[in-house]
Image (cartoon, rainbow, N blue to C red; front, side, top):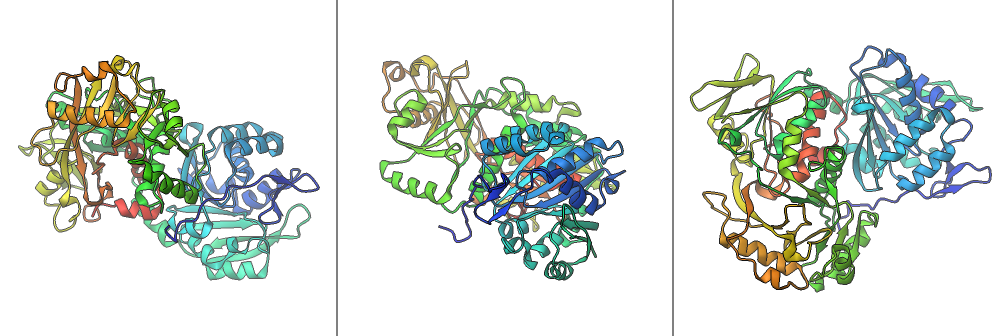
Length: 626
């Protein structure tokens, strides 16, 4: 087990003798039920000069430590809503080491949220995520209000945050009860995100805290406290933080962006930008050839992965799955995810003990992943399976072709069939040029999302070597899936069955079995050999197959064939090119196009708009094009 991984310990619910919500772990109360709203308004809003400081701003960002029930957030949100001169957007970044389970938070807010906050509290509870480590992005008021929850120990989480913060709410348990939340090292990490003129407020007031704030780059002073407390602390950052400066440098005026590629990567970026008010032109070589990239791709699975050390691939997968569900669940039927669950079978029975140990160490909620034996796996699938494994309740069946077309039809998005040969910077803008050198489109911001084609465009543009040695190793890997008649499977499985290959529930058109991996292919084709492989993989997942299955003839079945763009390490390359400002790429999604699509679209959108990043800095660094 990696020494860097610390399981998340959700909050336990307790009340003290006076009926106040109490933390047994820290021996301290969360809030006084009678004074929570007054404390939030006096200490945190007025202490940070709000609402005046956000007026006339495009966006205003708040960072809170010790989110608890979210009463400070709710008071902030209410004040923002009630202010006709409010900023266009409000972003809140909140650190919480012991988040409540969703059912507990809903019940506690129903009891403890002050009356004026009750409606907003119900909206918060409706979106509250399971207590899983990492970042969770929630959106309210049509996306004008965002809440990025960072679940994990503050000392671990804070160095990973990427934001430009205008105001800080320090609301951890008392320094005497939870001293780690007030350590100078943590305050320095928070100060690194301070925007010019950033302010800070907290109910805590000790000379030691003021000295720590001063050493971290804040000028701190005492002010009159609240609710019988004589004093509180307010502070102002002396200088802009290093991470804030980096975040601010990436901001571009909302305008026009050109996206090259209309597959899962390009569609996710188009959505991420269009929802933020950008005008997006998508250039698609596949349509120029007469067929959209995922036309005929009836179904695919979107399932997270787990790893014993919760490595980067597992963390990215978990974050991507959550972002996909949040972004796509309200799309029209066919494009929206079908949350049917996934039974991920172990390769052999001998690995069951290892899986049990992994899940015990990770301590993820059983509502998200749990171990199942062969009988329970078969009951979940509605048909006999070969082995037990892990059950992911949020495993999703997706229809890629329908999803892509829906995202590309969003207001503000225009799709043009065009083959981009190279790009060129001209007068501060990026031009997309065809093979004859004709301009196809231009914009200040251009994103190459055309899978393995991005490598060729960069090479032809003189932008590949020596700056991007990893991208230079990107290659295309062919593969196919097979569409089986549901009748051959007595209706098909009720949930996704994964393992060595996969078998998906019936979409109405049949059950998809996959997939093949063909190195060195010149074309991505449906073939008898490929169907032999996909049928064999599917049969290996099942406990038994019947006569109708045995009657299936490889080479006679419908299916879909396409390409995967693969980079060393099988992580994507997403971000702005350091040697070509304004030019971005999002490619190398390999077999995880659905997992990365929405997350990377929002990562790029958040960076361009100066929002807190929906992805931790260490993970973003791993996928930075290089």
